[in-house]
Length: 78
Image (cartoon, rainbow, N blue to C red; front, side, top):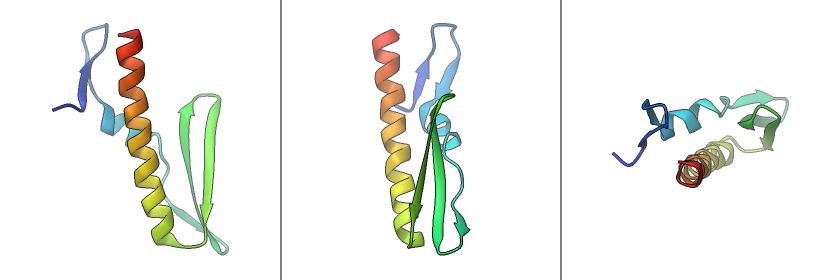
C-alpha cells in the first residue's frame, strides 16, 4: 500500500486516485484526441494526439508522473 499517505491533519489519501482525478477523459475533437491534466489551480496542461492509443498511453504515463510528484511533495513538506 505505497499509494496511501497520511497528511499532517491525520487523513489518509490515495495518491493514485488524486492523480487520476486530476486528468480529464480523452475526447475526440476533429482529428485530434485531447485531454488535460491539472497540476495546480493555476497550471492546467492540455495535450493533443492524432492517435487514440498514443493519447491513452501518454495519459497513463503523465498520471504516474503526477502521482510520484505528489509523493515527493509530501516527503518534502511532510
